[in-house]
Image 1: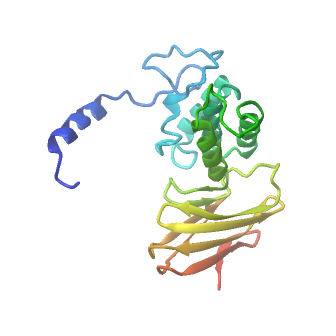
Image 2 (image 1 turned 90 degrees about the horizontal axis):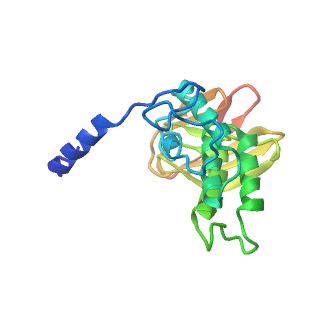
Amino acid sequence: MLGIDSEDAARWKTVLDRLAPYQIGRYGQLLEWSRDIDDPDDQHRHVNHLFGLHPGHTISPLTTPRLAEASRVVLNHRGDGATGWSMGWKLNQWARLHDGDRSYKLFANLLKHGTADNLWDVHPPFQIDGNFGGTAGVTEMLLQSHAGVLHLLPALPAAWPSGSISGLRARGNFEISIVWKNGKLSEAIIESGSGEACALRYGAHTLTFPTRRGKTYKVVFDGTQIKVQN
């Protein structure tokens, strides 16, 4: 795009062209390898082939539902245990699949079985991936913005029926605070840092509205739609 590093760009374009495409295997799983040799009883801690689900954005229930379902099969095969950092990864990936209760289970497992008394991630002697991953996972449960919309409460678990969070940052230079009650969105306060259009999603409800830089907007859900409250 910048017209620089043409030699490196050509080399990486060659690599990109040779990457194996996503494929779904005989168990309905997203293939880990270029051949369908995955073992459904393999509960290895690595889930590298789900990079497109998280932290990437090429797999999503919103845009690629078949691949998202194939990713769900993989996570079910791999189980909810493993080392602390691995549970942090799985927590984020379940959140990207919009499964709040399974995300919560991974978060609980991470705290119970992957965290020491001093709150360090357990992967002897210490690995901060689990700490950062746990924090990121909770954020992903409450707000996602990688799919072109500010997705409010995409993976809210039943264990958190009411609550609030403030100061979340989202793509597009937005700062967001969210309040929910009885498992449903109550309101969101959105501050626009750049004056870009704001595209929102809550469940199956969507809303897009223009913003002005530095201005704050209050969005509410009335049970049937989300709307900007004047």
